[in-house]
Image 1 (spheres, one colour):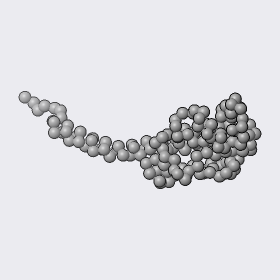
Image 2 (cartoon, rainbow, N blue to C red):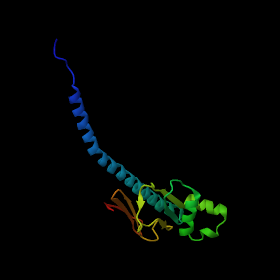
Image 3 (cartoon, rainbow, N blue to C red):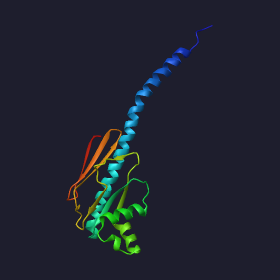
Image 4 (cartoon, one colour):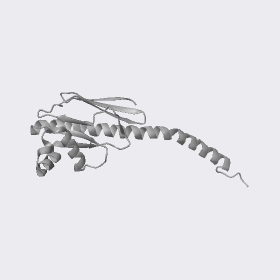
Length: 165
């Protein structure tokens, strides 16, 4: 009878052990990649919202507010708080006018709850009727020891900086 072909049980167990070791080395880097992607998504969303607000403010010739939203909904309560804090005369408007302001002049940016907003970070910014920010602001996000900072100048220019928490 000829020699059988195939793998022995020992060879199969060694191969599985080597694959398990390689997989264990890959898991932490995969976790870091996921954290980095969540951080990148948060900064990308905020940058897009800031650019949209600048354009919208200049186009409509009025103030437009951008606010961070920790709850992943675009509800009117968060937009109402943002408008009350930033838009002059908002509280004195009638309900229908307040609804119009929330729909056209307040941009709410949803931030993943797993991405931390640093305590020194701004949470809202207002653009005037020519598309300039009323104040220079810095937004800082942190996830898994990685940091992204978005700096907005008074002219409305946006700069992103990567760093560590």
